[in-house]
Length: 249
Image (cartoon, rainbow, N blue to C red; front, top):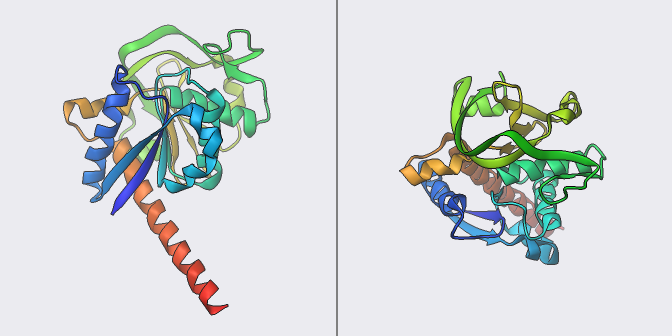
């Protein structure tokens, strides 16, 4: 089996995460007894051909924002969310998954990123009070969450490469609803979120892909490739059923 994964972002060989992600997917796919093909989806091309997203078994919104076209990235995230396509967002992907949710589910159209729009009236993404550029941090995982079941423990340490994160002033937005904060630092600031009504929709401010640069298979990426594998199987079964119904008619 070959799973196809679309990488939402503007590829640059100078970005460490962009080198690491295909390696991380290859390592994880091997562990889940399949092969993986990755394709970069430039954010300024996505809106011109949104239908191409249907070709993938999973989508990953990658680091290195601001993106060339923020609306392109947000549209791909929304596609994954609405179509139940397995989704992983890391660093910039985490930030924009939250912007999509606050704008399109909670209805706050002015929610924005202070890096790309410093004048925004609703900066839900702002500069971190303490930079996480090339840092490692401890994250506490919420009990009964998907992320905790993936790691099999309550506390983890992960690598970061960012200066922006969720604005704590807007934490009240997540007191109810389907998007849950399931991982936080010692100060309670969000580091992991997941959409509880989705088969697999997880976003992390940290970069799990970096473990691949040390030749290590990451549990979160393994769970993600397994979700892509399951999605492909379900899609094939649905297509077979539809063809059978059409033949009988």
